[in-house]
Amino acid sequence: MLKVAVIILVVMLAYATVYSLMSIVAPKVVLKSSIAASIEKTVDNARDDGYLKAFTTAQINIGVFALATTLAGFFVLFAGFRKAQQWAWWCFLVVAGVAWLGGLIITIVIGDKTNMILHLIGTVVFLVGLLLPVKEFFAKPAAEV
Image (cartoon, rainbow, N blue to C red; front, side):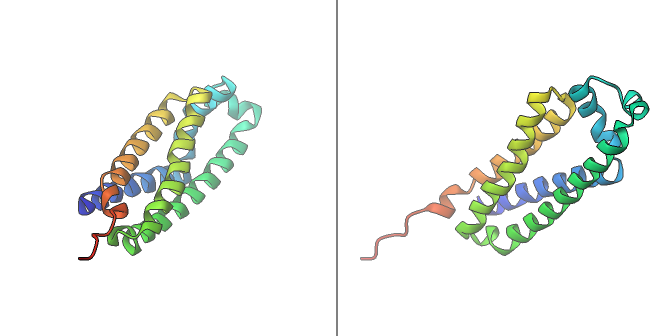
């Protein structure tokens, strides 16, 4: 199960990398539904009011932090998780849990359907990859005879 979980988490991290890069390279694509949900304006209205530059800059910064977190996730995955080290399991639980579940909650609260779907996909893949091998991380050692 651990090998399958590693593959699933590689897929999750690759998905997160694409999402992060999208925030950096094409922030307006990610922002489109967020702006509509948050301030009830279109991207064109936000441009007219001067909001677009501020939102775009913030989205690029979020993308850079997300990309750094994703790169760290690859390190944790290959340095500890695939070796069934508990610290790596906890690291994924905390960091990826905050990133995916936190993002999901925020997008639900503001009503951003597009990003909510993207976060829901990431959350499901993350939870499957994390929970599938849980026994391998926390199995009690066999009693010595």
